[in-house]
Image (tube, rainbow, N blue to C red):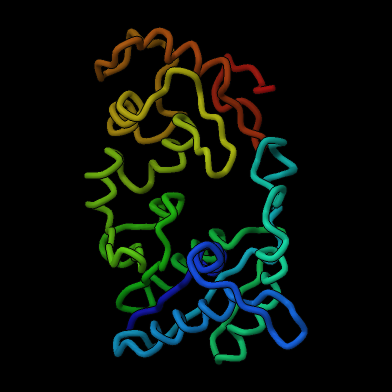
Length: 249
């Protein structure tokens, strides 16, 4: 048995920008919702799909906005798209599918929790999303990522091939290189190649030696990278990850 966990927010955005506009009897825009229901029906008709849950961002903001002012918000989202958030949740439930509307947390958090909860109970958990944040959930073929639009499936080996680090290092990787989609700026000079080289060896930020002369991997500009990491490295939950460190402002 497989469990399919779907990123409903991503699907709603995809349908809004890819499907024709349509209004209900009251003149409310529902084109994306209708397109999503057609897509969801197609998923449910596949013989291998038997257990499905769909996670939604009931609101765009989450606890992360309180931690970092630059984190993504709902600003600039088309009102006709934003207005379909509650509609698509109800429509999903009406089709008999479990919906997880997230408020303090995000849809990604729900998918990650589902992957952790079900991975040892079923043959496989399939995360239906192309979101690179979810790469960290993969491992030993028990959890895979499926991009339905392109019909591409990624496992842990595919993450290593594409990014250069293991799934467990993805949070560290994105912290260093940044993530424009989420408003995460990253640390200056830490590019994809240097980050992958360092994390492929040390795996996590706190394991990277403060003194670049002791690094066991060769990276161009190691002194600058180490200095920038020292300047910006800070955990809002625990304070500095290692001393000396200065709070990111």
